[in-house]
Length: 261
Image (tube, rainbow, N blue to C red):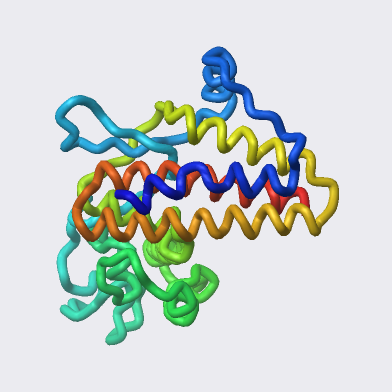
């Protein structure tokens, strides 16, 4: 917890070193304006175990969670082979999507946050060599549909597990935090920090300055990712949610920088 608190304000100091003219606004009216300007759009996550309310934070919709959806029969729809998984090695037929199969299972990974994103690429390519719709253009319409659905799911699984933020959101979802929409962050310290960060990005007029800011933001993203691991592994899910809230802002700041480079 002490480590988490220490990280909250440090990026403001770093930004001021680069942009000493960046001003800090202290009025409640300004904080309200910042909250409105930088509210997290799209969807938020809802923690159903909260006794006093629902914790929500921004994120994308994930179409799969462990144990969700319908379970299909364990055998291949075409030949009955019991070991069929996404693709039947016996008759080489693509199987229908099984919603009970989560993203970690697709790549044969243990359900844990820490993983090597580089290890996903090879497994992703192996699956697409079997599932890509172009490979079944001469098959039945049913199997072409299966191919499109399976290929899309494998692609989304790889994209989700590759990035720290989306991987954190997904593994929280597998542990009972479901996707919902609306809500904003109300922490004034974080809102002021993000305002200063975005001002710095806006004022940066060359790639050197932007890359310096991006390096600082990426370091913050890594720190909050490490804090998420500690909270998640200790099953302090409320604290894990707060870590993800901050990761969301820093991820979006990185995206803004990339657009300007």
